[in-house]
Length: 118
Length: 206
Image (cartoon, rainbow over all chains, first blue to last red; front, side, top):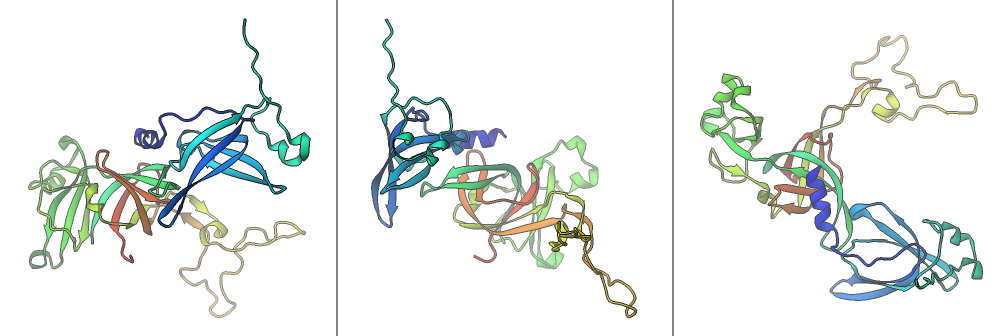
């Protein structure tokens, strides 16, 4: 089993951007079309993280022209060029699937504002 | 034919050259040595005898150890490969780099034993309705005709032992080769349990 662990460790990125469930993130995803390569930005709310090791994935949800769009990204994918946290969210659960059933203001996640410590 | 003896290590996922997460089976090739050669003049056919995995010399019988006189230490697994493509000499050590240029492989292994199984699982029979007052659920149905021939033909598909037999999968893509670890990664599943012996061959149909 150690061989498998070593192979997985090789595949993993040394450092990944830290973000949490409820954060709004920008995923800069490389798209390869034949010879050319371009970067597409997918911005939305992180509603879930799943699995572990190389298989770790996260789900980003956004509203596109009134339609909800969800994309699953492998966290360690070499095709993720950059990951930017735009806004931190204050949530109390690890899977925000309830957002799917809500529209408008109800589908918002409160921003996380950390109090300064004295 | 071009082949090596290996052991299935297990499955995982890796990013391939296009950055797509691919399911792979990891196969470890452990010290394959050419034990002897079969030639047309002497044996009537061409083949290369490969041995793999070291075994304590004290663990083997003298007749078995005698086969390794020319190649050195005795090996746990012995296998003949018909019409070997590569030019080899007795005593040569073969590694995974043999598959460097090869894109597709066939893999042979012994499937996991499933025990005594019914006709539905073993032969893919449809069975009957599970509900609606059905009195025929997972049975196999008829097994023959009537007064003539008044017997059941040999080889009729019936319940019985399933698995534990030689199984091949063809045209598995080689995703990665790691020479340091002597490991081969192929896309998809391979027959047999983890630690099971498998034979990796160059794909016949590609």
